[in-house]
Image (tube, rainbow, N blue to C red; front, side, top):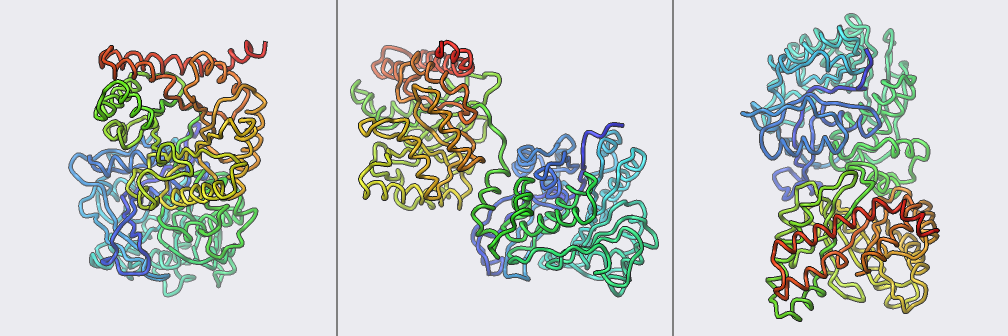
Length: 639
């Protein structure tokens, strides 16, 4: 049958709480970063990032952490159709940290957890047969229920022509061999475990493990002896992961030394975090193996992917994208500490963990000073501004266009309620960080910008408006550039996307030229925003020039959103038409053009709450329609 999937992974799925502090015992760590984890889950994410069509069979709890796992997998492009929800058990949890280069303390909260409740009845034979490869993990043979599920999956794989891969994934704690405090222990000799694994390997096509894992599977006194014991019962190709020495593949007979297999050395880098490195290796190796590459190429993919993971914090989030891996293989790095390579880190940031957005229609109502003035002119209190913003948010919720993502830019001064209500939903959200009308740039919540962003949801894109012109007085220009750079570095540290809005003064010459020069200047000083928010233009040549600049300086940029500047609706629609030939323009972020009239009437008491919602929703829908029709409108403008 036609195989619609490359890889199905079956096994562990957890939430990993990684200690942020490095170099101390787990009990002394004070804050943690949350990631998805578990061997099978990490490999599903990794193979998806590396361009394979991957799926995961696991179970999560019917609670917030289960939803987090499910949502993260979906964003990563993993098929979650067989990620089921357990109504009784909790999602597995692991607390872990980095003590030093050799100590990585773990506490596994896995007793009666959801992913260990997979049963044979949960395995669909047609689904298993739909994949080129089934990846099984050793932990899911450690208990009767999950063993029955794994063996049933193997049975269906053999019947459906799906190759079987075993990641030995030996965790002594999962087999009841060590106590809770010894979760990081990776090897305890146990004849019962060896006998168990030796009953599995005969049905495998590919077996992958560290030297310790090969030894537990084969039970020999040396790695070579263990490999020969496995070979005596299995025709599978055996891959031995050797850490900084790379890996060795044994597709046939076992020689007398590991170096006499198909041995491919690894990359000489700093070992920062070995947790997840094996899953990164497996992801890279499978990228080659499933696609029919030779053994040396599979090993190079695996080694490079593992090297990138071992240099970073986290497991699944550290695995590279295919574009990133290709770059590293072609160019290497001059940095022993790979996480200090800004090119690699930029590639990683821009190509992993985010969904693609090609058409973004955004209502921008983060205005503060303008609404304060409007409310005061009509004798309304500042509380009325809060109420008005909630009405605008309700208006946006009523607009559900086809073919585009809907976004909102909301402040946390008067829009805190609307922002909180929208967070966690389907709407793209951005949040301003600048103090209104500040020039030079000042931040709304004070100078400690990293501290501010640490408390903001990572799903909030950081929007910063800077009134900037490349011909500003040197002192002003340099001060603003330093603050934008400081903000950009804070976003890198906290994991937020940055939307940089440039509004040059028309008094300082041609605005289009100023925008183009400003974009170039920020790239020159090392600021690479995820998004740009830029003024409309009266010429299509401006957008062509901007596209060329951004494509040359940062082809990974998410795109440009066209702002409104309170431009009248019809004029702005014509300006939109001039973007039609530019692929870099991914949408708009317009505010006053859409809400100013209703706001003035509402503050003056001339219209009701429902009138505001209706009018703003109608204006927003018409603006989206104008954006959608900009290609047709472009022909009229040119005529």
